[in-house]
Length: 72
Image (cartoon, rainbow, N blue to C red; front, top):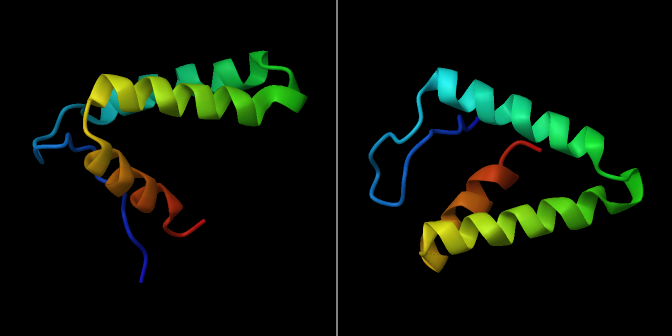
């Protein structure tokens, strides 16, 4: 069964709509393209840590990690 990623905040409320997610996706794709291919993984780790800090909730971040791992 496929799991669909849902754009929710730690409280469960929708924080970004489809248009916002598309904008974030485009920004992320552009940034990955700008990174040295040998450092793309480091870039993504730094980005994840910055977003975890902004989220301010380690348990919610863990749930997001598990959701991102689905269906890879």
